[in-house]
Amino acid sequence: MQTAIPFFALTTYGLEAVSAREIITLPDVTIMQIAYRRVVGLCRGPLAGLLGLHTVEDVFVEVARWSE
Image: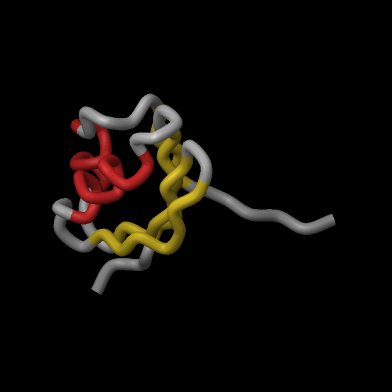
């Protein structure tokens, strides 16, 4: 099993639920939170599917984390 990669997608106000429904159709994706203009999730499979989303403006993945 692949490590889960956190991501969030930015969308237009009012399209959060529509974007979440589109994102959840991707294999190995779990939605963690739907908020104002934002859908947060985890991806355990290929990230390429996130690049083909039609109802989001931008997608960001967490590639590193640090603490001070």
